[in-house]
Length: 228
Length: 269
Picture 1: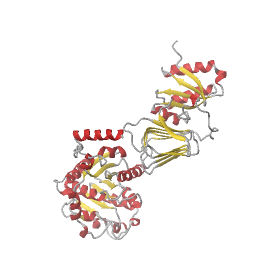
Picture 2: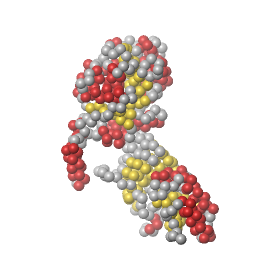
Picture 3: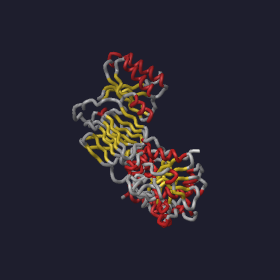
Picture 4: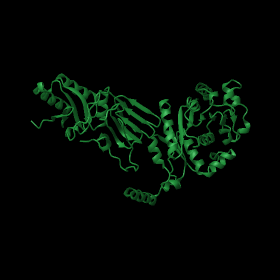
């Protein structure tokens, strides 16, 4: 048999299950075998799924969640780089990010207590958000489209913009410092995470790259997205 | 036969809504369409002046709505074009004299007998704007290639989308090719990228437009000005014709090289 397409490791937020190459049904079977083998180990845990560039639909996410649930594992997040995966993840009521990202490295100790849980569930906005429009949601906000200058996005948790982000954005608006803001073109008029405020650099880049803004050491910083 | 109701709006004032309405009315009527231009800017009427019909007004839109005359009596026929009419605004009242339902009712009454109803919206996003947009089948947004005008246009496009009146189409007015070439003015592609809607026309800056507005003879009457031709192109596109966008002297090859070199230089600083 070839190399196991399923990799499982521990991260700070529980388990991280990485799906490799191969047809979907084979992956599901392989995952079930792993769960059977270590049933006692898995029971009662929570897991995040990393699917890489593979596009998943909502049915596949629900299928995975149900499979894990049968072995007592609570699926809470799906990380993928395809637009379809992100939308389907939010639709299925799961988190599209493992925040704070990079926590697997364990480079720095957790600075604060876990923030109180924010109501789960994301809001998917599939249109251009224009000047004067404000979108407010206690969970994640995912915009498939552009956020124009003069528009505002306020989210209790993460904000992901699959397009240009030129307006004002506030992630973790209820005080969650682990919230992040991701965009294909991250150039907001103003960016806030919890109580931190940042502005974009004055000069515009000519070729935007996807970026993620997060709070590190009490400051907002932007890193390439997806971030490993 | 039922007319298409097209509202011309912008958000920001002074970008040329009334000029566009007057000229499109003229251009469409010259192409054999039966047109009513409707001035919805109650209290600040201008459309009559631009069309040179000010001294022929007897009744106005508010008189119609308040029952002082029949709709037909308020229509002012153009002195040059048989099929061009003006429904003037009241100058002595304000926006509160009209409700959205009134506009819808007036337009429905006119629909039967005409091909196009062009509504000149007031600036802003308040009641007057809402009245003007309420009866619209289609909306044209007028903007100038300036950041403030584009920002207001974006706001209005959002409101129109929320009303389910979209997709609005864009007219870029007063484009100065010279400034664009020097890189000192937003060019067409920058405006379209900012607003993400379809373009229906570009009107170059043209002094004859101002002269024409002051004399009550819109440039669309003559075919020898750049702006007049641009208005006729929009009219043709409204009538379903495919008219290519003639380049209004966008930067040439050398200009592009120059601009590229300059932006490179700026990045290194």
